[in-house]
Image (tube, rainbow, N blue to C red; front, side, top):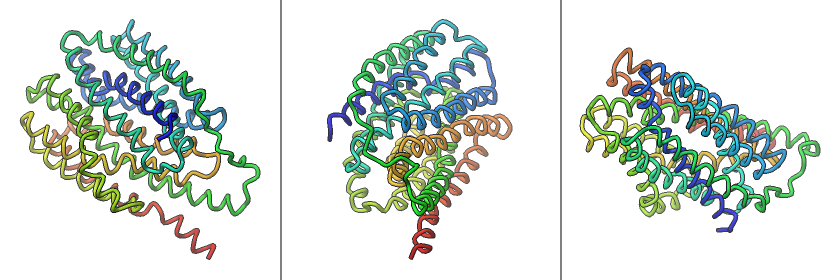
Length: 392
């Protein structure tokens, strides 16, 4: 693995540790400390994710136009400014404003990280994206574990801890200046008309894939929103809830030997891996719908973890393989935008369902959404096949 990829892995780890101090506890903070309903908390997270959509698209554009170093640095500086403000003002409604700003800046950083992996180590294929994914989840294992302890003392300290981690990430990001994202690709103006037709088919394939990604994230994000609040109603402590995410992150790292033989055997049969992952997601939500104790939630999130190990690294890998020359940033930004839209709609939808119909009905709806997500996942390559038939 190239040194440049290791630098990206370290940066992703630090970035995720910082951000995961806050995101698992957002709903709890707004609901229990700021006195807002689950629906209102969902709307706030919806705004945070909407800002992330804009950030993803801008981050992808900046990556393609100016390179990964400048796009990551831009997002990181905005994040630091937002967190400084959040440390000082984290009451209502200031919390909404700065959380939205942080969502925007985070949206700039993440697609740039994935695009940089794809261009810095193109021959790595899934390995590069999986390495970034593992770093992300090791951060998820560390961050919430510390966050639960810190939050039990004071939520105020969470904002300070988050700021410190982003400052540390800023200094790591300075080392990215030496990572080349120029892979000698021709500018769009010299791409042939036949290439433009092919590019349209890959873009259509990406959009179809993105719909499945959006639906998956709509459901997955319930674990950090409605389910987090639901665990509090059942008397599960913040430390125990944070431990669920620590288990999630550690299991993703430690569970690789269990899924690697399956992944290797399936090779580039990406649709099969996604299908397995979504079915496991459905099983996880079926289990959590009957959960009433910490142990049952622990079992449910362990099942969920194995599902995401099949799905989450594959989607950016497919996006990278679909990306035409000079459009890696745009394609990663676009696919990340679909996940951000899912994160935007999910908390609000989940909050409304939970407030109006209760958690049992909410879980049934979520399982139905996952089943629907299988359709675009299985059909995303149809535009590519159609393009091949037209050119045959």
